[in-house]
Image 1 (tube, rainbow, N blue to C red):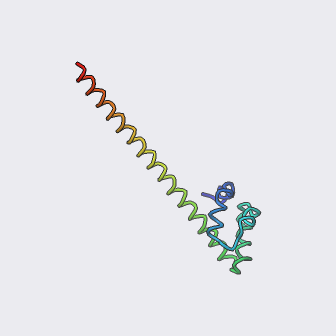
Image 2 (cartoon, rainbow, N blue to C red):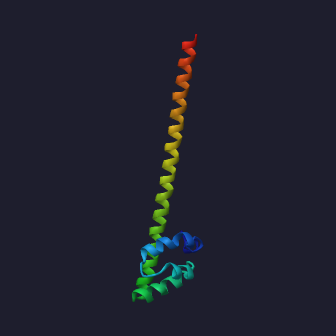
Image 3 (cartoon, rainbow, N blue to C red):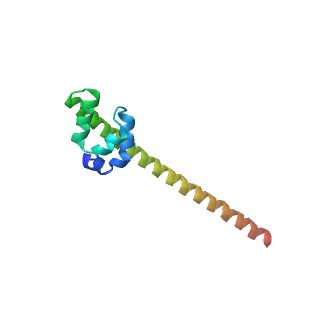
Amino acid sequence: MSWDRVEGQWKQRRGQATHHWGKIMNDELAAIAGKYEELVGRLQEKYGIAREEAKSQVDEFKKTVDQLKKANSKLIQMQKSLHNKERASKKRVSSRKQLRKAIRSK
């Protein structure tokens, strides 16, 4: 995922950023609006760290967001698969019950 995509989804990612960097308030993150350089500058200011360290933290944050997104996608796929298996199982049980009723009624 490029930083442009993070910037485009900034409203969703802002909560994660607030959790990640506690010294930056939500309204400050809203003002940053996902701009990479703005975020790096704000980290330098709030935490008193070098520019390279701030860039490193932002890049690490992006990797974490990517990993969470992939994990969430896998979880959703697993849930759908389980749901489909449950539906198929219920259909088989229903078919068996109908077959038994048909046999008994003869």
